[in-house]
Length: 227
Image (tube, rainbow, N blue to C red):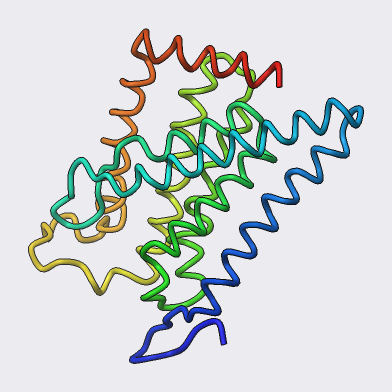
């Protein structure tokens, strides 16, 4: 069994964690396979290897940074150190195909980090993890667009928040803190999720617009285009 049912909720078993890890590896392998089908064998092989390498490093950075919490919000959720940016950056560089694949792998890692020990239903898991974090791949649709990096990042973060909010209305309303303002109870999931997503988004946009950071991002983009 991949999960067990205890006291009204699901708990992921060791086999479940292994299955998720295998799925993530398969998705990454499919990226390489699809890239190897395009263009000449020599060029595509080089491109697929560089793409997978960059995506892998970005996923690792995002996952590590997700543990670095700048501020813990009073009702839950936390502002991390730009963790979402590195996932959206993959989509911005390589388009939606690679972007969604990297974001899905990130969603698996996030689920394994803190979601596997408490699951209400499969759809709740999708809203809180697989759909929410995979939505960061939407940045890929802004590849090559004017101001595409910032626009794609903002759209991706808002989309993640929407999935979290849907799950909040369906599953988490009864867990609302007693000290939450009574006048805002109808919008509790919106306040809960966007209270930490928006500040992190603002912080990230400020950082990536700094001249030295913009220059570094431009250099990485040139390297990605040549790979």
